[in-house]
Structure formats: C-alpha cells, structure tokens
Length: 188
Image (cartoon, rainbow, N blue to C red; front, side, top):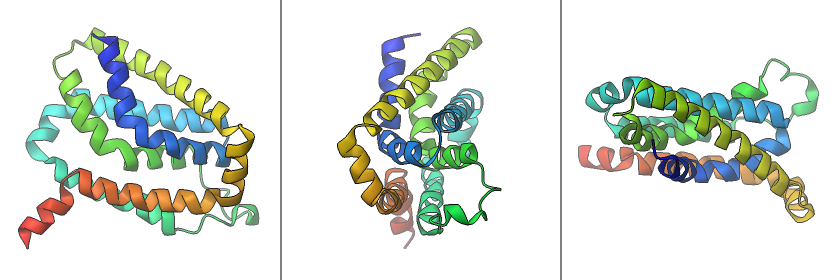
C-alpha cells in the first residue's frame, strides 16, 4: 500500500470538508467532531472496499448526487436556537457524521474505490488505521487554525451565516460533481 497515494487521496476528497470543520469545531467539542468525522471516514472506506464493485454496477455516480439535498436541508433548518433546550435530543457526533456523509460520500466512494478495490484485507486494515490517524491530525490542526484571533472574530460575527451558505454551495456542488444535473438535463 502506497501511503503517499493514500494521504493525497484523503486530502483531495476531504479538502472541501476541512473548511466545514472550522464551523463544526466552533459549534461542537473537539472529541465529538473528531468522532463524527472518524466514523464518517470509516463508514465510507468500508463501503468503498466491501461494496465498491456492486455500487459501481448498480448505482451510477449521478444517483449519489441526491445526497446534495442533505446539506441544503441543513442550511434551511433553523439551528440558531441552541439555548432553548429543544435540541437536547440532537447528537453533535451524529450531526458531524451526517454533514460529512452528505458532503463527501460521492467523492470518497468514487475516488477511494479504485484505490482500495484490489487491496488485501490486511492492507485495508492498515489503510483504516492510517486514514484514522490523518483524520485525528486534521481535526487538531484545524482546531489550532480556528483559535487564531482573526479567524475567531470572523467566525463569531458571521459563522452561522457562512456555514449555511457553505452548506448550500456544497449541496449544489454535490449535484454538479456527481453528474446529477447533467443526467437530468439529458432527460429533458
């Protein structure tokens, strides 16, 4: 297993989510963000490895574009009332996990699939450990960046609005990048 290729693959498929981590780390604690992000990576890696060929055969990539509705829904769902106690049932880990899966599922599945398809079970376990390490490292690095005073001021003043705009843009990007829009245009 080539760890440089794995690292490059991890960075390339998660680059857009690194920006989202700034927002999530302002809203939730580091361990909860780390756990949600880690679970998302593990779920997508296992899906890529175990059902990759079946997914490619039965679900074309453009169908994964439907996942773009999740971040758009989250942008318009009112999460501003954090102190009213009505949201105690909502898990920060689950929120991070759903955000990650909605933003990165299509890219991760389509990019990690060819990287992992021919690997042995032992190499796949090594990959899981390596990607888990990178996930934890990225959360800690982004938390350090989020604590820079200038970044903190911008996040305090405009964080919620910027995150909602980011969610909508990512949802639209998922529609476009997956080929869903192109597929729909060809239907009509």
